[in-house]
Image 1 (cartoon, rainbow, N blue to C red):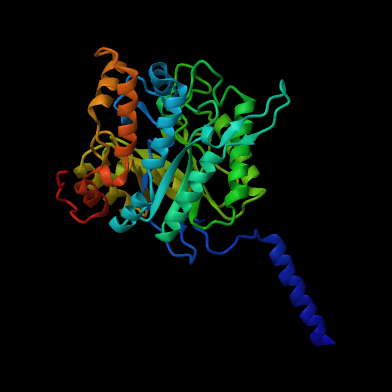
Image 2 (image 1 turned 90 degrees about the vertical axis):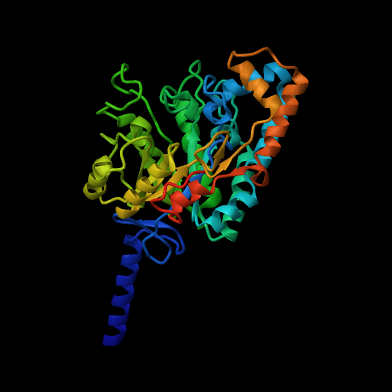
Amino acid sequence: MKQFLLFLAGLFAICLVSIASPVQAQGFVRTDHKQIVDANGNPLILRGLGLGGWMVQEGYMMGLSNLKAQHIIRHRISEIIGRKKTEQFYRSWRDNAVTKADIDAMAKWGFNSVRLPMHWNLFIKTMPSHKTNSRMVWNEEGFRRVDALVGWLKANGMYLILDLHAAPGGQGQDIAISDRNPNSPSLWDSHVNQAAMIALWNEIARRYKDEPTIAGYDLLNEPNWGFQNSQDKSGCRETGNAPLHDLYERTIRAIRAIDKNHMLIIEGNCWGNNYADVLPIADSNTALSFHKYWTPTTQESIEPFLKLREQYDMPLWNGESGENTNDWYVRAVALQEKNGIGWSWWPLKKIGRGNPLEIKENANYRRLTTYLRGEGKKPSAKDVFAGLMQLARDSRFDRNIHHQGVIDALLGASRGSGAPN
């Protein structure tokens, strides 16, 4: 009887421990205090590339810095060739700009992860409206693209980080990044937009809660907004980022109601660099992301983030860096890895140099961009459509210009040489 009672006591203790401890499935990337670790608990340095320009086109990546945001570019194109042919181009672009060949190449080069910048409108077809009594309708186009990407990455033993790059309404004054329309309510000005963002992450969690190829959910890319001081449009001097903190907490609760497996990633205000009043976050499986562009590659340059790591016992990840020289890349990567920080370079490809792959412009597309920049006469609709469809075909991996020097600078094959492209 005594042995039986001891057995029952032991069983009761085990039950208490399992009730008190959050359940997390095995096989997932997660945080372990100040480190990101793999499924076996080993420290994991994420070395990746961002698929910028695939779902969200920023003007400069398309040779159209003056137009900035994707919705403006799309509107100007549709004025020339019509909405139907414009949609045909964008669908062809998404079919070609990222394929299995790109992911296979990244794995061969030595990268172990990919960050996917997502546009909300590829995942949400219709948002709820009290006026029309409509409900949320999901756009399967975006989910279909994620599913394909997961398959390609899984075949290569790589990880995916999902990044909400363009949130409903837009999360920043820098409209190119989030494709924000200044004439419509922003993410911060609309409860409907915030509810849609939370619902989207809830749906992503529902669909992918059991998928270990996904390393984490990057909840909101580069918010840049003045919450208290309207003169501080970038949010870099904000000391009261309470709306950002609140939105993160509500989003995390919605995700955790379904998905207790995936690591979450948050970014501060000021393009991911101002964490005043954002922390602490009430989730132990969350990492901090900072973005690093055009700043010195000294220890002092990342010291503020290292202090946050120590203070809040959370790992760091550099979610974006790039658009610089190979020499700068060598030094920036070395700095981060010396401090145990993983990174995702921006981008894999675009029109222009500085990235592993470059998309070639054709003559008809150059005529279009010259016109849209206000520097030439209007080309014919026939030539514009031909140029756009050629651009979509030329965005494929086998048609890109390859810059091995960039890859070597990032991954160390020619470390310190500053190899030219």
